[in-house]
Amino acid sequence: MISVNNLRKEFKKTIKEPGLIGSFKSLFHPKCEKVVAVNDISFEVPKGEILGFIGPNGAGKSTVIKMLTGILTPTSGTCTINGKNPSENRKSYVKEIGVVFGQRTQLWWDLPLRETYGVLKEIYEVPDDRYHKQMAFLNEVLELDSFITSPVRTLSLGQRMRADIAASLLHSPKVLFLDEPTIGLDVVVKDNIRKAIEHINKQEKTTVILTTHDLADIELLSKRIVMIDKGSNMFDGTISELKSKYGQIRELNFETDAKDIEQILNYKQHFGFNDDDIKIEKEANNVTVKFNSNAVPVSDMLSYTLDKINISDISVKDADIEEIIRRLYKQGV
Amino acid sequence: MKQVKRMLRMHRIFVTQELKRMMEYKGDFIVGIIGFLLGQFFNLLFLWIIFSQIPNLMGWTLEQILFIYGFSLIPKGLDHLLFDNLWSIGHFTVRKGDFDKYLTRPINTLFHVMVEKLQIDAFGELIMGIALICISVPSVSIEWSVSKVLLTIAVIPFATMIYVGIKTATAAIAFWTKRSGNITYMFYMFNDFAKYPVTIYNNVVRNIITYIIPFAFTAFYPAKYILTGDNPLFNIGMTVLLSIIIMFIGVIVWNKGVKAYESVGS
Image 1 (cartoon, helix red, strand yellow):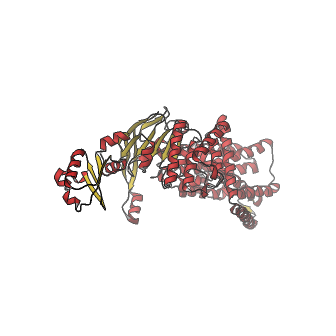
Image 2: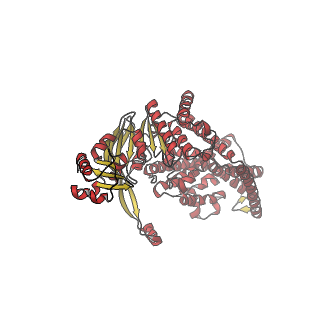
Image 3: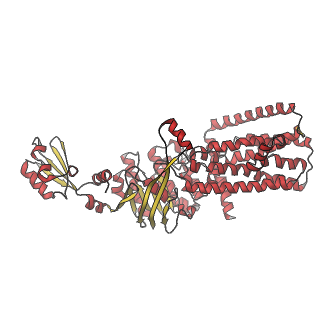
């Protein structure tokens, strides 16, 4: 349904020497440098999927999203939704999509919220009956009723985000782009928004492309993730694939009254771990050992630990996605 | 045809929205109206003082000059009223990345930008223009004919389009340079020359405002035809032709600019 082929975006950047004199020089002899923000990215998204699109800050996520939403023109490569291409026919392409940029709003700032929906109805040429049906649905899912008559400038961030999501869905788009939809929101509002996204995805079969730094969004909503860094594809697969591929990190938790456990349990020396492969945290009597299970099997770690010290409670945990991603962002693949 | 109908409908909807927006801040709205009435009153007073000292300028009588001046305010006012939002493109919309919004909507971007705002201050210019025309017409002895009336009415949208085309082209430069408000401003400075008969200027200025930045066709040339009936082919025909060429250039620069738009980091 969405297919992205070798998408590439280059920007020209003027290089300035520091200070006023540098700015002045660059006014007359600009030095330009080519920056590749997105380097031949390809992926496909089938209908009805919620895709988590992640990557560290500055990885090129926004640039990709902006090309997919028709805002930026790609240097080369294509993206199509149902065969429609934004570079060829932007207007018919954008009718198929809804866009929410968490840090911007498309609502009419000075007017009651309801007025925004009235204008969007006209812009997207939504017929009356469809409009009323869709409004009723969005009202139910996003609970807009309590503030639909308030001017947009008076809405709280959580209300505004719900209102913005509703605005992007008014014309029942086939694809919804959500760029950081939970940024700056409290836990309860985050939960509500996640539930709403899930509901809309189920009910309307809307394909969702979700960028976020809150990995809970991804874990709760999407089965598949595409991760990019420095403009290139880094990982494309399901969350369980990510875990099995990079999730060698296991967590060993136990309780002990032994002191100096680092010295008694000298894992590093005993097993020959690299620095990156093991981390020990201690809090009162609770000890957490994070280690790379490819380097040392879990069973060896367990028997060695039980051998060395007295333990009252012990458990082994799978790595959580956050830990995996932290490592990936830090070192790249 | 369907397209035009839709555009008119969208225009009406945006204008209604804009009026509602103004009414939302009642105090500001009322003070704004009082402000522009006062402003226009002083403008008129000032004009009257100046022109009553100059009974005759290069063969043009005071009343004729007032007529040209008044006529110049009509296209200028219409441009100001309906298409003022183009200024914000060059000043901040592109630089701050707010242009993203227009690109995610299924309407022509240029049209969307144009119809989004209404600048009611422009009623000042329009009211004053009409007033000046009404005051001067009885004493300039125009020979009216049906074709002249029709041409007069028909030329106004084209004269307005000269403004719009220049503003579109210069605003669109911001897509490359991020900021172009000052370029638009520089071009607009020349429209002050258009309020008076071009015959009073030297050749350089006259050629610039006739052929390069043809603001003279927004006022002097059409007004000259209305006053004297001279050479409609040049005075009216060139207004129409040049306005179409300029708007065409504006649209081309705009469309190229939109493709070059870089948004901002987020």
